[in-house]
Image 1: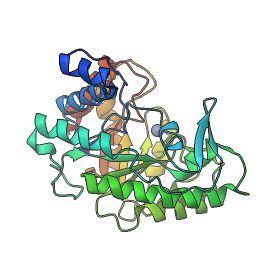
Image 2: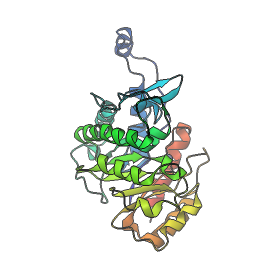
Image 3: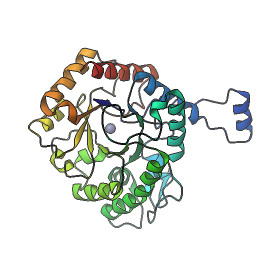
Image 4: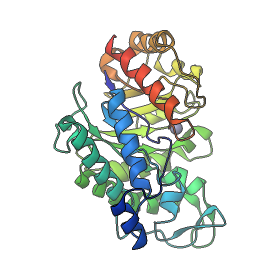
Length: 318
Ligand SMILES: [Zn+2]
């Protein structure tokens, strides 16, 4: 089974230490987040994860896009929609992805960008991650221009389509869209589906949708979304196991969250194994991709690393 992460890793930016870094700092071009990306990439590879991320260390999932997309803004720590939403003229995440791929390739040639792009055992590389349009709109205050959220969501989907094209061109071997708001029941699911379809159309790499929360009400609808993988949490929300019972996956795979991202407590191999075995019994190994429940942003670095290691070692023995 393939292993991956949901995306975020403890962000540990660091000040300039070497002479060249101090010099870059003097000229205002030092980027303290690069060491944080390097650390996230190193740890994920060292833990043995197959499809890794750049750690999403630079900013929070809504703010990073709201600051950069024309028509959106962050004012007084509040993401807002202030005008007509348009694609960003430059990529928002491609530079960090490019740097992560470079670091990954340096550590192991296996993580290079020119990999076979199928979702099969042996795949290794760095994924591109965006926050979904429904989540961005529902997390933002609407100030003028749009009369309803639906139109803003569709315009955002068009803007994010451009972003995933950048990420694919940069060497992402997998594109993941994070839409936690879908499980809240607030989002119009048909608009959400249409928006995801706009983003994923014509992508040649595998496409995943990460939705945290209780999915028992919306999962049937998610199976109709144009993605290859639906990624959900099964540790914090044991109820989600119900969605795997007698399910017709319609060719999709399940991203199976098997680590609790809400605590630094490290799961035992036995706990993780018994959870994954339940999923294997219900949908078969061939339909599972194994990952943590959600991002690790709030965990300590030691806990994040130890958890990933337990996950990878458990999967190896199954
Ligand atoms: Zn999540």
